[in-house]
Image 1 (cartoon, rainbow, N blue to C red):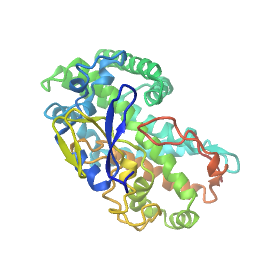
Image 2 (tube, rainbow, N blue to C red; image 1 turned 120 degrees about the vertical axis):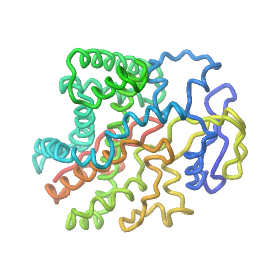
Image 3 (cartoon, rainbow, N blue to C red; image 1 turned 60 degrees about the horizontal axis):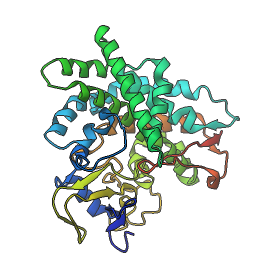
Length: 372
């Protein structure tokens, strides 16, 4: 698609509807930063009618807003994910990683996804938000269901389960305050930052979901990429301190989010030589953009010496993933631990037998069986 035209009009469901798919790097980067591409889903769907019953807190969250609303909401959470804030979390991330890997007996099969890639970021973001340990498996299940392709009823039900849970948790924290990120958002709701109750619930749900989905997929994809490249794996094993320097290339090579979240044009836009009319949905294929040879030479080859810092795996512009520093810290700590503790790690099943999650937005493995 990219070689034919980096921006193409494609069918979007039944009824003669269409959307535009962006596959070129330059065009994707431009689209991600173009204010004429709105993310305000409430405006787009206001007059369309829908049989869906997504909970309002899930249907209208920070990622589905434009400035100035988006600027205000993002400002309330950004400080929790700065480099300095994440640095303070590193000892906790390391402790959790060691505990999860401690359950793996070398020589026995181990599902890296179920054993580490899923629970590590879930535990970290739940700890940040103050979600009790007993509830974490449930909220993880509801979060995964939000990304189920072709199952709107499952998605809608999960949205209500998550929003109802967060509403109850917020009420419990109002009765018994603590020092979590969620407590800070509650203070903003009840203080001078003019955060509405729905915005509070919505931010809590978004942080919970976005706080681990990307990292879970990133971890699985990254380890699989290295296991399929023995020379690179050996090099990192000999020099585990170089893991931070290769994270961007791993993100570029197999992006954990394949397609950016919903956008639509507020006026006619010309992008990549293609004229897009007003009120047209635009899908930005981040995975395709990261493999554009016009930006990354030999893009289908893993090159851990490549400067891949300009990748779009975390997006670009004002909507770039606020949790990117946390995701990279978790990936660095987890991959370093695996490579140093299990130098003989290898796939326990042929790559052709691996299965991937059935979802449109994210790209991640359902399991990754390994041995050491």
